Length: 228
Ligand code: DC
Image 1 (tube, rainbow, N blue to C red):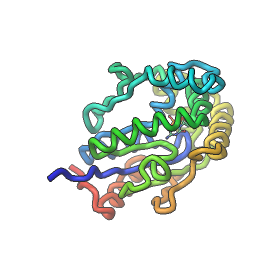
Image 2: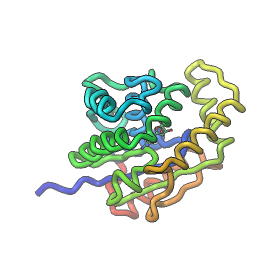
Image 3: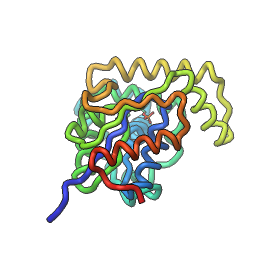
Image 4: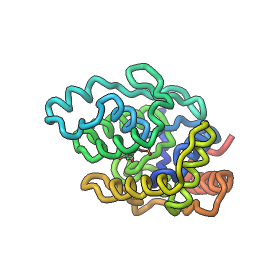
C-alpha cells in the first residue's frame, strides 16, 4: 500500500528565514525540501527582464523550455532546471525583484504551480514560498506562516550577504524588502497571506534553533514524521 505524501508548508515574506528553516526541517525529518522562490528566481533569470510584458503565447513557449525536478532529500535535496542544479546565481536582490515581478503573471504561476504539485504527488515534502498553504497545497496536513519585522529581516539578509563576502547597506535592504513585501502581498493572484489553518510563528526575537524546535513540535502534533 502506498502512503499519501505528507506535505509541510512554510510561507512568509522575504528574508524571514524560510529557506534555511525548510532545509533544516527537511534534514531532521528525512524529507526533500522544495524552495519555490528558487523556481521563480531561476525562471526570472532565464526569461530576462520584461518577460511579464510578453504576449501570452510567446511566454507559454518560453516557459515550456524549462523543466524543474527535485532530487535527493534533506540537506542533499537538489532542485534542477533542465537537469542542471539551480545555484547561487539566483541569490541576488536584482533577481529577487525580477522574480517578484514575473510572479504577478497568471500563466507563470499556473505553470510553476503544476510543476510544484506534481513534485508533491511523488514524495513527502517540506515546501516553502508565498502561497504553499493557500493555493498550491491547500490540503497539506501541516502549515506554517513565518513572520518577522522588516528591520529584523533586513539585518538577517545583511548578515547572510556578509557571510558570502558581500556588503550591503541596511537601509537599502530594508527598503527593498518593504517594496517586495508590498508587491507580494498586494498582487491579484495568490497574494502572500497565511492560510486560515496555518500555525503563525513570529521569529523576530527567536534564534533559528528555537524556531526549528517549535516547528518540529508542531509537525509532531499534526501527525507528521518524527525527527531522526
Ligand atoms: O522566497 P524568495 O525570496 O526566494 O522568492 C522570490 C520571489 O518569488 C518573491 O518575492 C515572490 C515570488 N514567489 C512567489 O510569488 N510565490 C512563491 N511560492 C515563491 C516565491
